[in-house]
Image (cartoon, rainbow, N blue to C red; front, side):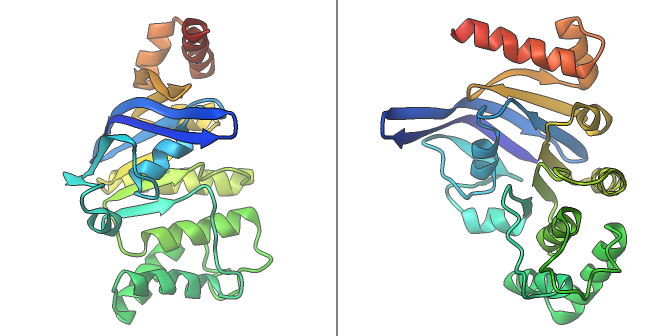
Length: 248
């Protein structure tokens, strides 16, 4: 389980201070997919970076399976699998070597790495690219490699920043099936996406962020009912529109 409690994060700029995250609160439960949604600049990626310890909040607290991320970030990283906004795979290595390198960083044996790589490769449908150098990979192939690398240590908690961004239709379908499999295994999955169809199909709970704040949260059905809309996209627009009106 991942808990964000009153997260705040500001950045200094040439013209002053930008409050990127301003009191974000939510709980992502085990065995559920929690979607983090918002327009560009809403604070989603900054929030995710605080969840996976790349940034420290100015105020507030992140806990992963009860562990305080600020007090023991190394322990949190051991139980997290993360697909960041920057995929950053090593182009001179094969997909298998990329995965193995991260397995070694997590202290796994060669046998464990080989077993986990085989299972992840089958789940992500990447057997045909496993022993190719990643230089020249398509966006989908890079994303699959980055996800396999992030999950090689078998983490219970998974954070994915726009995992289907730039993927073709078939790869997107495979990725959705993979996310549902993670949920079925009882993992806590948090992901961000701009694709409402995907969010509606996958998410057990949705957290909508606008201007650094949570403006609405609930199941897809709850959000549609709250904003009186038949589809999730219209409910999302209503949610962020009402917030922008309040802050104008």
